[in-house]
Length: 352
Image 1: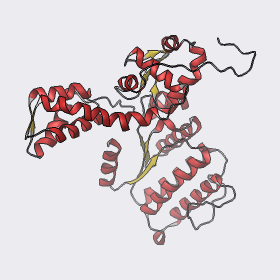
Image 2: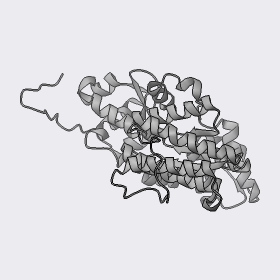
Image 3: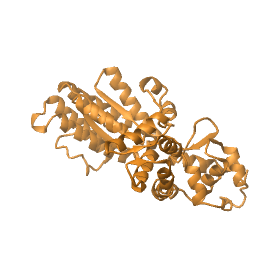
Image 4: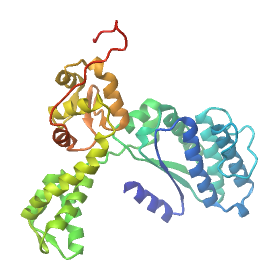
């Protein structure tokens, strides 16, 4: 939703928008994915029949970049140009991406426009990919070339960016998107209802906000569930309470379940042990105690869950669920904590 607002604002200023849904790709797949978006941006800046020398150069550089992704040349982003020798062919992702951004940005300058890259799930970029993007964007700032990026993802983005490049904290701002305030959550429920000729009682709104905790997705789900059960135009606290089971069941079957289904045989007990300790951030050693293991032994499992986006680290040594109320779901979905037996890699290895 927020990236959608950036898209709308960018288009209103006649900037070209390139949208990138980040996945866990190797560097070749990453090159293919971003090349496709940048090719579309180049053609949106100017149709091919109106290309000037700068646009032909940008296309040639992009062709070099795509050939680097596919050495045999079977995938070239559909660019009917010769590759630009000496540009984006360094076999170094950061240098190659910088060449592409510079060439595309110079073409955009000629049209008095800019390009914004909207990237979701940034935490799934590998460290080399994130480093390359940061380095290329840093060069755009230095050269005053109109290519920028707006990224969204989990709270660890700022830490990941800082680890990738120390100057990232000066290059980007990292606003934290938190839950809605009680007043904003009430408005999010009351205003759409009012548009349809309905209204909430004060205690109904207060109850709905308490249930959702102000989490935007939950506000939407509660609003939908309440609308389905309410008899009249005045929505009461009783209506909100009656909607809770349906709302909870829907979230369990979709929002929460898809997250749990991604977890492995050992990851699920780790999540369940965290849930047993409560909804707040938990220390690794405490989770290990619940499981009857050591923090060292469970370190890889914890790291995997963070990498998958199911946990994040608000401070050193602690991990928390990335979505609220996941602990409650885990207690419902996994009534009993069952930890699989420790599997040693070789007969001489012992648990720490």
